[in-house]
Image 1 (cartoon, rainbow, N blue to C red):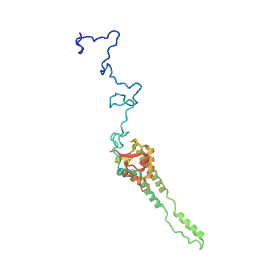
Image 2 (spheres, rainbow, N blue to C red; image 1 turned 180 degrees about the vertical axis):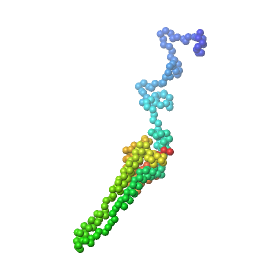
Image 3 (cartoon, helix red, strand yellow; image 1 turned 120 degrees about the vertical axis):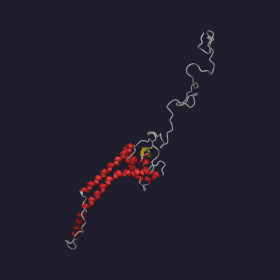
Image 4 (cartoon, rainbow, N blue to C red; image 1 turned 45 degrees about the vertical axis):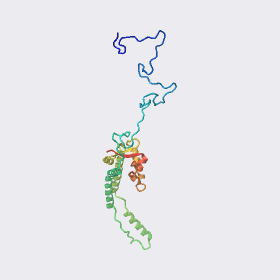
Length: 259
């Protein structure tokens, strides 16, 4: 007698099929032993790759690669490649102008001072102009008069002093190095000193990442088009949907807010 089976308390043996005959089929609709069985596809047919087979529970992902989730619109959290919470929207025109002015001061303040000093040195070293004296020329000797005038003009238009030339060259060198530094920072990190101070960032529109020194330099060259005509490209962000200048549209960049 077995008391372990609640369905067969008296320990009776189930009826056996007669010798040589198959046991009766299990009732339809009841699950068999082992893993749950899924209804198979009709013979010769298979579910398309990546789709659910017939009878599979609804709402489950199909076979194959995971389904792609719709990308978040640019300017919203979750942009590929950006840190959480970045970017928070396109930068305003005023913030971009402010960043440009700060960068301009960094690039141009020292060269401007050197240029002013160089001009002062050049002006102080220039000889004063004197009217040519033709009294020693005989009357009617136009060759003598012409030679005297040319000599006076040559002496009054003497070249710049060495000090002024050095100051001008030094100013140009410092301005070039400072400009390349700003472009390098903007390309590598997305933020020049001015952009960092005002909380904005230059990134590639399709990736949300900084564009590198090369593309940042090309973008600076494309700013030439922003000045034609009447600086229209620099004003374009005022009404553009993505606040882009002409240079931004050519290179595929946007300026976004970081705070």
